[in-house]
Image 1 (cartoon, rainbow, N blue to C red):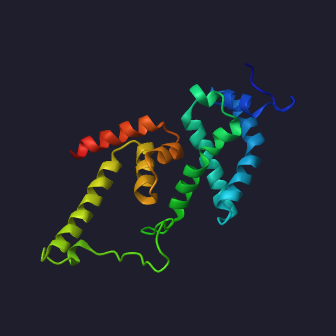
Image 2 (image 1 turned 30 degrees about the vertical axis):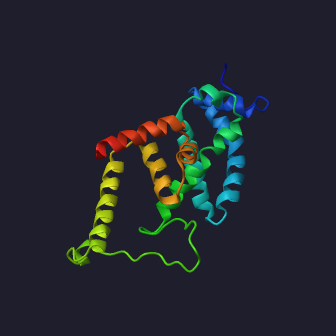
Length: 199
């Protein structure tokens, strides 16, 4: 397969994607030029509330994630290029939104009634000594969250992203695996490995 030339007629998206992921730099340049308008359109639909420069950052994040992923294999070879690229959209939007989010705020609230208020953060030092079972249980929950965060700090980035989606957004294993581009079995194995560290 020869490198596509920008002066030749437009190549198919699938041809360009496969050539680019196999390491052909000219194919990568032509693919990015040809598919960036499509990527920008999809980003405007999904994250239109964000300013233009932040949307452009999402575009760059998508291209970086695709480059890190490497050549398509198995069923991915039959998948249309635009659908393959869309798989990287949600994680890229989440990463960029989280980079601009005020620390300590949630990205969105799910399944809560409108009159429900967010819990107030409490400093560990302000908790009274274990006066009753409720205070002891709250302290154990806080300590468990700290332990989970320490475990996630040493895990693979995609496992961390999937686990965070499961914890914060209520995704099940299949949804989280699909969102980060892992197979469900691979995510199960990664989560089991984390669970073994706790035990």
